[in-house]
Image (cartoon, rainbow, N blue to C red; front, side, top):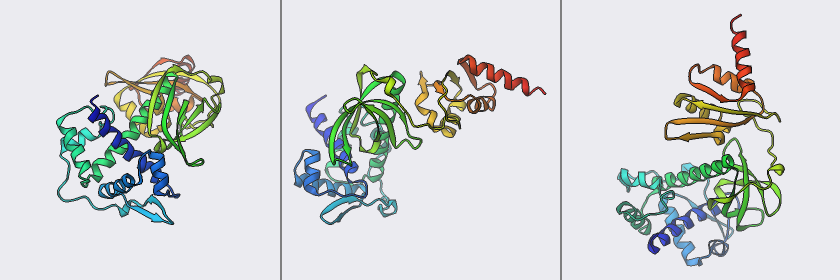
Length: 304
């Protein structure tokens, strides 16, 4: 990657980190923000102006700054959109592309430097970054890989640091992950919006025996049972599973763009069985003898 591209990417990532640090009820002084972002106070004030141009409302309370949480305070979009359709599409994949130089990138970076009103494009980019981190963490879970959480901001200690963890699962709202932290040797929760970046490590899990999740509902049931299941889903079944059972998302894989699979352990069979039976011909049970037997039993009952 060219040095200029790397500098611009770091600038954009720093703006994301600033947004994360300014969210919440506790504000931060300009001096503290400069320390956490490893820059000077003058640059922080310049970023404040950029955030206001992007549609965020930065407020000051008792010498501390934070972002106004209520979305209705965001300005209405201009009648003349700043970005073209092509630029908006490119924004959504900016981080994934690692900032590779092209004509669209140069145009967007120039608009960022000019502090133009790109609120809608930036919101899409911010959401895309969170979605990309969810996908990487889910990949770490399915592949049983350790994951580096880069530049994680701890509200308790008011510090930013890198954390090496073994991700185990998501909360139902996908705002936090449950992970085993290698340094403290304990299970902890990490908030996605406080993560600067997620990188999958080369090492696999080393402390799987210490992984413990609070019981959560999967297909409507909780419990400590472990039934290993592999399903092949149609596109319709995949879409309904994601919408109706979001906690199943980490166990779903998409291969070759149009092949969908659920592979994981479920605590109970009835909830999943009901879902399968409600979609005849849309789901194939590839692995899971207990589930196959349970489905056959339920089908036989249906004959009477």
